[in-house]
Length: 156
Image (cartoon, rainbow, N blue to C red; front, side, top):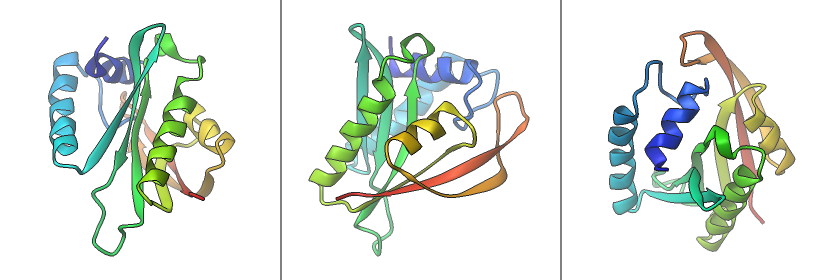
């Protein structure tokens, strides 16, 4: 399975991760091309996770911050294919990302996610602090509005 297939599956499953229906896997491949360019330029660190020997999840550490924020990074696009959920993959990806951020001397991470989602519960369980909720921030893939919760985590 490819990263593009995982992204397309998440959107097909209704995840609000920036894309709208219909979202063919070809568009997912094109989007990943931009991510790979960002990785090559050193602006993003890409993590992949396997379930049952198959690449099934991913998350990104966005290092492209302004000059006055070299101590922090953004967490982007935690994605797990529906066939690989409930196996601890998302938590493992986040733990790996946080450890890499610490290794790089980063002190603060931020992210946003759909309010009320399983991801929101995961971040809370992993010790992230809820900063607040922005109503009607984004759209579900079917066009309905959804709220977004902003989180932060200080790394020790």
